[in-house]
Length: 252
Image (cartoon, rainbow, N blue to C red; front, top):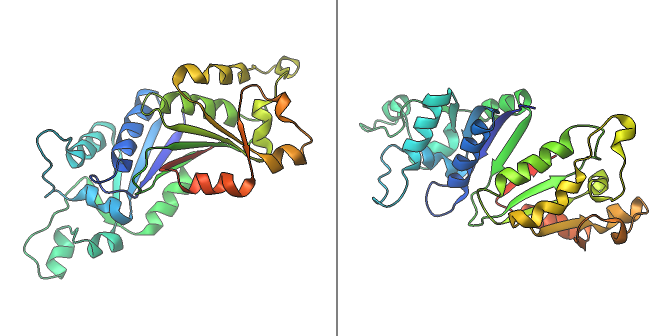
C-alpha cells in the first residue's frame, strides 16, 4: 500500500550523516512508489538550503541533490525561517530586510514557519525525523499488534528497505507491538496473511539489533520463550533511552 510521507531534517549536510540518510531515504521512498510531500529543514538542517555551500570534489553536493529531488518529484522543500536567520541562511526578501546584498537561499527552497511543519504532519501518513546527531542508527519502533492493521507489515517493509541503506538498523517492540514476535499465530482464521515468519529472515539482511520491552511482556503475561527470534529484553526506560539516541526513528 502506497503511503504519503513528510521528512523533518535537523542535521547539517556535512559533519553528520543524518541529512545524507534523509536524502537516501527519500529516494528509496519514491522508488517504492510512495509519495513524499514535504521535506522540512529545522535546526542545523537549514544549512541544507545554503546555495553557497561548496563541498570537496569527492563529496556529494547535498544542496544540489535536494534541488534535483524537488524538481523531479514535485517535493516541497520548506526551511524554518527563524532557525535559518540565526544561521545566516537568507532568501532575497530576508536579505533585503537585513540590509544585505547577498542571499543564499533560492527556489525550490522556501523559508516558512513551524506552522507548515504542523500542517504537513497532519496531512501525511508518516512523518519521519532525521536528527542532527553523529549517529548512523535507524530505529524502527513497533507499537501495534499484528493483523489488526497494516502497521506491522508496513514496519517490516520499512526495515527491509532501511537495511539497504545501512547495517545499523535496530528494532524495538513496545506495548502491543510485542505481539509481533509471538510464535504460533494463525491469521488465516481471520483471512489474514501471516507475515511474521519474515522476522526470522532479518539476520540475512544484517538486522540483528532487536529489543523487547520487559514490562510490555510482563503486562501481557508473555515470556521470551514465545518469541520468534532472539531478542534483548530491556526495561521500558532503557528502551526509550535507546530510541532517543537514534538518528532516525520510524514508528508503526
